[in-house]
Length: 326
Image 1 (cartoon, one colour):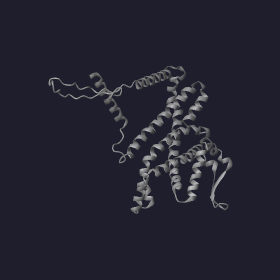
Image 2 (cartoon, rainbow, N blue to C red):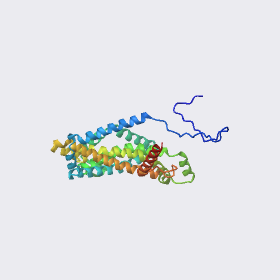
Image 3 (cartoon, rainbow, N blue to C red):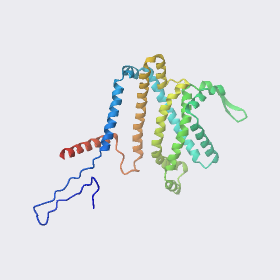
Image 4 (tube, helix red, strand yellow):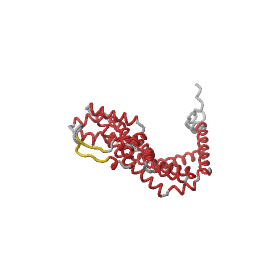
């Protein structure tokens, strides 16, 4: 029977009966050549080199102006506002998402309907529309009051004094974030094995204790990567608060670009690099949080980036040693 192309036959060193002095030579196992992989790697390296070369040598990017603007107080003040808006919105959005998810999973048809309607509406309306609507909310309702519907009001306050630019931005982003976080949390809770619920109920544990100590910690392993994706999207969505007169990172760069029209491109590069830094830091935090919650769920924890680098270098040295030995 013929052997397939590239196959290697392993032969052990066995003495031949008629000639004990002769032995069959063991053949070295050679991996199959994969020229397609090397060609694709070479093409990718060439494209990356061309991109980096164009990025460095093109005078249109004005890297000297990029260095001038990168740490300017105006940019750093906008960066601080971006961090504040993102932090407040992330916390409030997650809390709202948890409440909406619990309402969606409750046995009350009213709570389920209200939660579903909220998620449906906020996921359907563009975020910029929500922000602009809240920004002009005082034109619709000059005063807000709390009391009995169609009856007397207990107290009222001026909406225009409360709704500052920061409040409008945080409330708008939080309302939008809560709608998406609700589905992320609901999916994480549903991913917990039903046997965990049954075992907790069999032990007679209260529902609140079951959720806090058994269900939610296990659901976090599924919630974390999905919600971090939402958090990264939230950081980028903060650029829209410029349209409600809040000078965040993008708004500060846009304002400086109007004053210095010749520096628009380096200012956009400054914004791009800062957003890359922020999202990279969030991704690093995501990795270690996922690694923490993977304890007990996997046989071995996933390696850290430093461990991956050490393993890759060790494999590279071993491969080079094998190649030189051949």
